[in-house]
Image 1 (cartoon, rainbow, N blue to C red):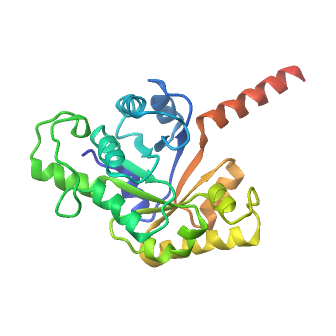
Image 2 (image 1 turned 135 degrees about the horizontal axis):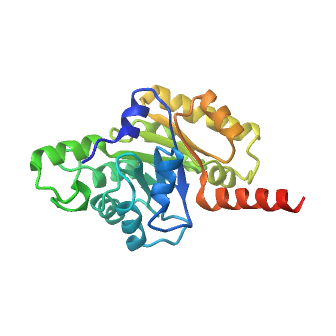
Length: 255
């Protein structure tokens, strides 16, 4: 597997900034993001409606390893994890992780034996169709893949320590909007209970050696979250960035 610069950076204490993709499944979107300076792109299957063929195209046209392709699968099931990894994804984000068993399933599905139970397929897309040493492909794949568990429900927050203690999980990504909904506080991001939940996730990351991650929708929010301790930060998503920039330009012209 190609070196995962994002995993190296964040697991050694650095910060990595990227973006998310929900709408523009085009052959150029990965290169656009890379040329803009994004270090990773999360291609979303949970909310976008994208199927496996769209994800395959998006990964194939991502300029790896300069832009690290991460896929948010719709749910933690083996066939989603293994297929997108075989296509060349360098990271997996699992939504709605609520128990340590679900976190362990992600690790088991993503890692080759003896760590996990990922099925063997070599000289295909994930290793750029090269006929490399199989032991080295297994070693590098297990080492380089970035595994992200989303903590975004009240149940997941209640099981935070158990989830954070699972070996092989690299990142805990707090899903603020889903978490607020789950806690009966939709849209209330500044509510004391939401702020306390953020602190809990960051502290759990410190305790168990995980990387805290979050989505931000503005530069000011991003700076504040990095200062707070988040080290994997997604700046917006394609649909929101496009709409915001277009609205600003049109309003400026009309004024």
